[in-house]
Length: 129
Image (tube, rainbow, N blue to C red; front, side, top):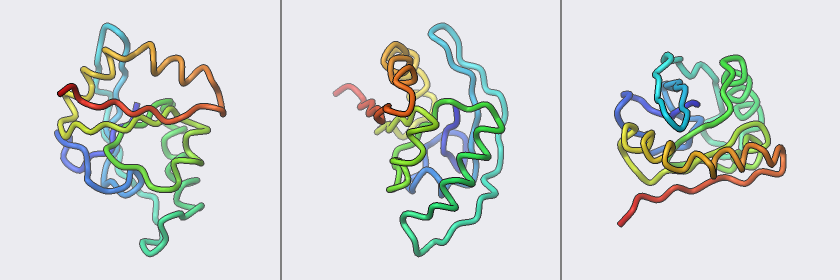
C-alpha cells in the first residue's frame, strides 16, 4: 500500500500524485507494517490537472514497489487511469495512523474491489461521526 504524505503523519491536501513521498505499508486484517518511504520523483505539468505522463510515471513507480492499494485524501482526474492498476481509497481522515486502522477494519471491502480487476471503483472510507 502507498500513502500520499509529506511528513509521514498526515495525508497531503493535494492530489495523490503531487505528494513529496509515498510511505509504503504492508497491511492485512491482523497487521500493519511500515516498509519504507520513497520519494515521488515523477515530474508533471503543474498547470495540467490530467497529465497522462504523470499518471503513467506514478503508476510505474508504485508498480515497481509491488503496490496494489493507494490511499489519499484527494485524487485528481487521473484516478480514472490509476484505478485500473490499483485499488484507490479516498480517506477523509487527516491522520495516517487512524486511516491505517480503518483500512484494516474495512479489509473485506478493499479485497472485493481488488478482485474486480480493471472494472474496480474507488473506495471512499469516511470517518465515523
